Image 1 (tube, rainbow, N blue to C red):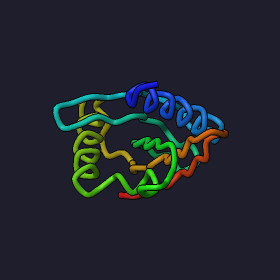
Image 2: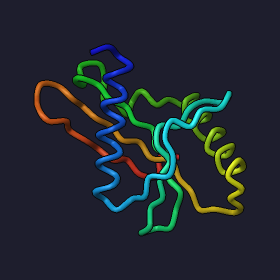
Image 3: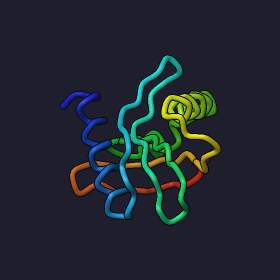
Image 4: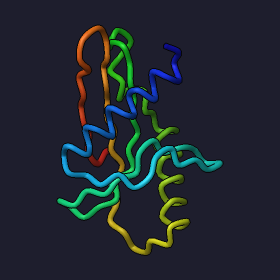
Length: 118
């Protein structure tokens, strides 16, 4: 399995995880010149739009998956989230950025959900 397929497999697992937590999946792989957002969801508990970056790694030998979301990536996610809100004519929303971190080696994946990391 190549890197892109592995990432898509992680995104699928992230979608399943969020659905089990009661999130509504609104959009996926939203792409603009500013960047891409893996999953766009709605959290009914807090009534917030959630822009989710999924990071999948086979192990944490070189760091945990979430450690690969640096300041530059956060800026791109923020700008792209703002574009999505504008494109969808959503005014004054509550929103946040989350990371789903997946370590997927030989066994079942270990999933961590880091909320409101912005």
